[in-house]
Amino acid sequence: MKPASFDYHRPQTIEAALDLLARYGEAAKPIAGGQSLGPMLNMRLARPEHLVDLNDLVELDYVRETDTELEIGALTRHHRVANAVEVGRSHPLLASAASTIGHYPIRQRGTLGGSLVHADPAAQLPLIAVLGNAKIIVRGQSGTREIEAGDFFKSVMTVDLRYGEMVIAVRFPKLLPGTGWAFDMFSRRRGDFAIVAVAATLRLGDEGHQPVIEMALGGVDAVPLRLDLGDWFENRDITAAGWTREAAAHVAATISPEDNKMVPADFRREIADMLCENVLTAAIARARGETP
Amino acid sequence: MSEARLISLTVNGETRETLVEPRRLLSDVLREDFALTGTHVGCEHGVCGACTVLIDEKPARACLTYAIQMEGHEITTIEAVSDAGLSPLQRALHEEHGLQCGFCTPGIVMTFEAFLRDTPDPGEEEVRDVLSGNLCRCTGYQNIVSAVMKAAAEMREAAGD
Image 1 (cartoon, rainbow over the protein chains, first blue to last red):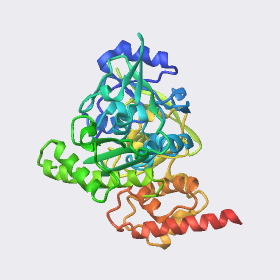
Image 2: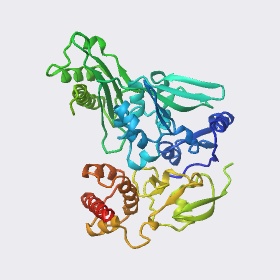
Image 3: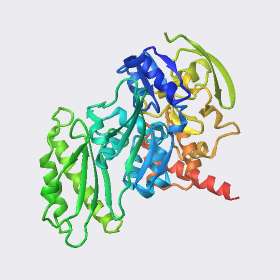
């Protein structure tokens, strides 16, 4: 549990960090909170020659609101994402999901940018980013790119990030007024990786209008899976008794999770079924202004 | 590459120097270089919580921190907690039988010293959630929860005086 040797760099500006990342390319690894990379280094699953410590780039630790968006700097710790007034007000789903990451001391160190770049298929923040069409702001020496979360996650722990680039911020569209939301996850131990995580946002729609339901699942595919259930939802009364049960069963039948000895696909599907029902029920309650 | 460097760390208010390779864990430097063996080492990948210390007053895993990263930050270890006798939290752990072998205790104390400063009046559910980050194989956790609740009440009372 001791890491292999690495050289250590501690840039004081974003430009200096980008310079180091460009210079060392695939031999370099940026470290922020280190709550995912630390274990990988200690177990020697990662052996970078150069560790570029981003913790002095405090200008990337911020939460900012515009009329329509919530912009959060990449170095913002999970504890702040979970507790910032601005997040609670304009994206309570993000706050709720962030409050379930790891444990209390882990959330004091782990960062938004780190979690997205690490891209664990069952992690909370990638799921919320994909569900809400967040934009990931990436900077390299050749300029800034803005990537839709749905395109950012490529595969298990693989994202659209080139050597020499780093995530600097994320822009989450705010939840519209009247939006019901919910997040739920199942893990074998508190603070452990989720086996399945589910998030949803939902608006009931006025008289004669279809409700709008967005739903995404983590842990059932290589990347967070955003479901397009528009056709299925059409002409169904989502407030009718038994609807959430029916919808959850439909979702569980739609997904095709990986089958392995540790977690059989059927088990994962059952968990997804249960979580979907919980999440839809809670989101409908919130959309009605009730406390789930 | 990765030659040892002389670094200067602030630990429990004291500035100390040591020669480290960049890969040295903060937990190892505290124990081996500074003889602060109250910080225990369990899993060395962030799960067990035994090595929890405070970095700039916030709890963090010393095993997921490289000592070289800590220049310019303030480290607080269990040795600083009982400077003037047991802290209210330590006393409550003693009175409620919140430990048996004591291996996990320093990590628990550091976590909750910080948590109770931020959250003086926690609910039991909240305490259990925070405690999930510290593995204890002796107590079954019940007495630790009681101790934290008791310490919180005592600290609130003391602050109100």
